[in-house]
Length: 116
Image (cartoon, rainbow, N blue to C red; front, top):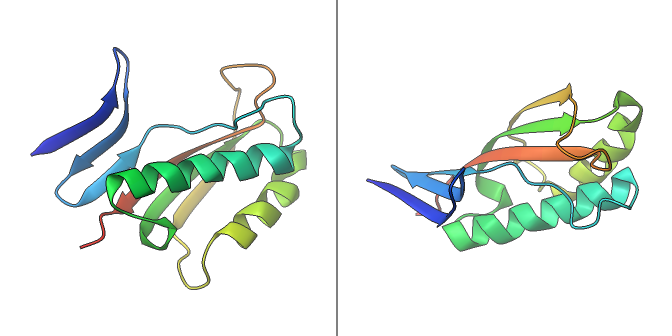
């Protein structure tokens, strides 16, 4: 069974299937801020959605991070490393990409396991 949560015309914020949770791409709360703030508020949104879906950051299976400019890679990783629980590193990719809005610096897509 597929469960779609917060579904709109183009996407669902959360899709659950066979104990796996897929989050749509998450961006920051305030795109006027720097990469550190954008990354933190983006990850805060991931926390909220994972909780709503029945999971948490300990159960992330994979993450794909899209970053506007690799000059921000180290600063983004500082926030990521502080947020991620030790021993819970998921499979991860990070690529430089154009963003949907000019002010966005980072976006993440996450797949996680549901907590049993």
